[in-house]
Image (cartoon, rainbow, N blue to C red):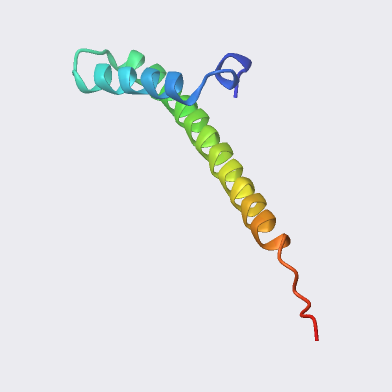
Length: 80
């Protein structure tokens, strides 16, 4: 993944990817350009997947932190 693509936000990468798909679907793009657009689209898809994975991991960490804090404050020992 190039540095330029690594800095893209999910939203920016998705917008670029949607634009590429629309131009490819138009049927007005020469084969050589289609291949270049396909390659760029593949890279953007990887960026989107990476951003989604990062968000998923962050949510899982927050969930674990929240559950740990909620249950960690309870005293598990009972007084006789």
